[in-house]
Amino acid sequence: MKYRTYPASDVTVSEVGFGLWTTSTGWWGEKSDDEAVALLHAAGDAGITLYDAADAYGNGRSEEQLAAAFADRRSTVVYATKFGYDFSDGTERRGQSELPQDFSSQFVRRALEASLRRLRTDYIDIYQMHNARMGQIDDDTLWDLLETLKGEGKIRMYGVALGPAIGWLYEGVEAVRRRDVASLQIIWNMLEQYPGSEQIRAADDAGARTGYMIRVPHSSGLLEGHYTAQTTFPPGDHRRHRPREWLTNGVEKVARLRFLERPDRTLGQSAIQWLLKETRVMTVLPNIYDRAQLDEFAAAPDAPPLTDAELEQISALVASNFGVEEPPAAFKGTMTLGEAALR
Image (cartoon, rainbow, N blue to C red; front, side, top):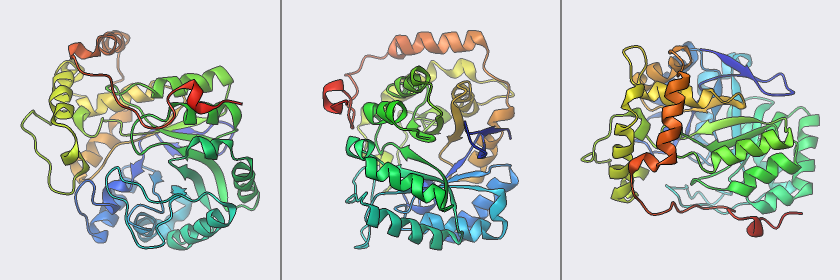
């Protein structure tokens, strides 16, 4: 494992992190808490130090799993968690459906104290707005509150996590242009480079002190290289509800990336290596739901890096959409300048 330190901070994270949506929500298959803790312990043994949870994942379950795994070695791990969804009525978010959001100062303080209790800690390393909209990017009161919480020692840094679906261009662009946001979590991978590339470019253009946390690095599993056009997903798995073209077109694109596979580097590791070529990327969050995946992805930073020739070939494939004809992608979030209502 290798490690990177967030700009203008003392927060150091493993280049491969662990997202607890796979262990706490059922979107990727059901896991008991004992199974989750065992996998988290194995991740720690593999050198993973960054763990990304959310209070809404399993209505607090992901944070409780973290505490069960690491409360006795808190100083050795970095907790990232999220806030903004109100699940007080007991409803759990499923797939792409969303719960009500609340970013008022009273709600955020209450959510933070609840997360601290579940995590059995007195501070959170990276506290992230969960699926922020432009209203939150514009909200001076919210940003002032986060700075206050940092001053109180309850959080070490704060950021924005964008999703659940791909998109949210100007939420990310304006966060790095107008706010001193320490961490931005986005979807970005070899198959889905827009709008992630634009969000990172905006940070460069603004000279922002922002590090990036990358989720869905394998395009919901496609870039692991194991799917075929006949692959089926179990009930409850969010991929079961995607259009069939997502799978068939994705498999066709992945076939054109097989040149990245070598005896000492898998396609899944190559996908992580591609992301780590970007120096603003602090950590990559592959979807880890079994021990074999953990072993493969945790070893990715030490696999042979992609060559310049391989990177050029990837760029050429992206420019031609991998030779696949398909309708333009549909995006959520604020994707045009007019919608952003820039100030």
